[in-house]
Amino acid sequence: MKRQKKSTRSDQKKEPSGKKPKIKTSLPALPAPEEKKSDERGENTRFPIVGIGASAGGLQAFERFFIHMPSNSGAAYIVIQHLDPTHSSIMADILKRFTDMTVVEVEDRMHVEPNHVYVIPSNKDMIIQNGMLKLTVPAEPHGLRMPIDLFLRSLAEDCRERAICIIFSGSGTDGTLGLKAINEVGGVSLVQDPSTAEYSNMPQSAIKTGIVDYILPIEKMPKQLLTYIRHFNSKKTKKPLQLSVISPSAIQKILFLLKTKTGNDFFPYKKNTIYRRIERRMYLHNIEDVTDYIRYLQEHSEEIQLLFKELLIVVTSFFRDPEAFEVLKKKILPKIFEGKPENYTIRIWVPGCATGEEVYSIAIVFREYMEELDRQYKIQLFGTDINEDAIHTARSGSYPSNIALDVNSKRLRKFFVTENNHYQIKKEIRENVVFAVHNTIKDPPFTRMDMISCRNLLIYFDSELQDKLIPLFQYSLK
Image 1 (spheres, rainbow, N blue to C red):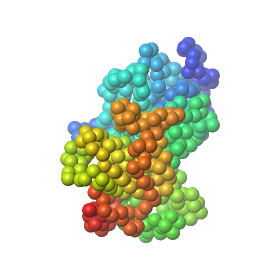
Image 2 (cartoon, rainbow, N blue to C red; image 1 turned 90 degrees about the horizontal axis):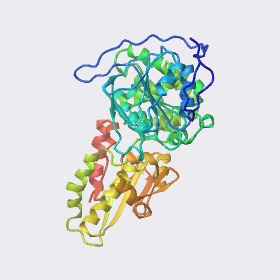
Image 3 (spheres, one colour; image 1 turned 60 degrees about the vertical axis):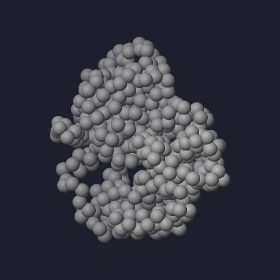
């Protein structure tokens, strides 16, 4: 069959006619990976799963992508398009005209298979668990919804390094938080070059995170995607992670380069974490041998900076792990406030604060608790991190509108103002917070603290450094 070359615009109600245009491609065929059914422990099948999000202008982007994407890549493709909740979608029928893969509209509890395209239905939210797509009816079908973020976050949790996300044309910021989650677990992200997008807001919002792996026009995405999938499939045939694959001496050389160029010492970091992140950078550059990667680092200074950011894993969110904030409010704050005079200043330190969401979350909880007590204290929070870009974002106090997934509407109204698809922390909260570039390992600690929140930092350090930092934190507390 031939594919139709003319794209169907998203504002057309009429279903396109014609046959599929035939696309010549030099990309080699990839063997489909061996399928393994989910077992009772919830272990998923082992092929990559690609979540593709788009909003306005997305239909044309999907058409161009699937025209160029071979039908035997060995991956599954999940399409999350912003749809009118009051009308049935014909997206699946349209995409069938642009690919030889099986295209289906998702039904609840549908299992994902490779070389298939799954399209979200209208007026549904969707997640993936144990390789199964699950649908729910949105609580507010006409309100602020972030179906792309919702799905990509579940994809990150379910698939980890097998998760791949692609962000196409769209207005707003949906997809940005999901992309961050996928980066955190070692997955891969591709974003449409904003200059080629009909609506550039969504791609630009994703790019502002500074962690996007590839920024490409849509026509170049399939080749890059296939290169990564091929590496992933070849990796599956190897033994589980062994540090001997990348020799200790090679890791030493890379860490020395990082220390020389950035001034930061990653030698005390857990070697498995370092190994996985180095391996991921090698895959992204299609480099097989670590010696070649060391040479690449020496010849490309920008790659040293990218690896530096990769090792930092700058990912956080507002009220992350909500149950922890419940414990803070119900059990910790009463002890901190007990017996304190009215003129007392409560001091909190958040080392490894990344882009500041946790710092502001703590500030909000403290403010709420003081209102419940009907007493006012001075609050001083110090957020520190070695990543200057992250600290810059934290100081701005401006975050994409999709933080509504993590911050309830009451808090959004009370502690934020809206500005151009972003939420800005109100001055009354920001004036209690100081952000600074600071290296917890080598710089002098903050002192006279009432509380330290260090929730996602020590997990990246080896036991020797952990044993060094715990007494240091104890010294910092009053």
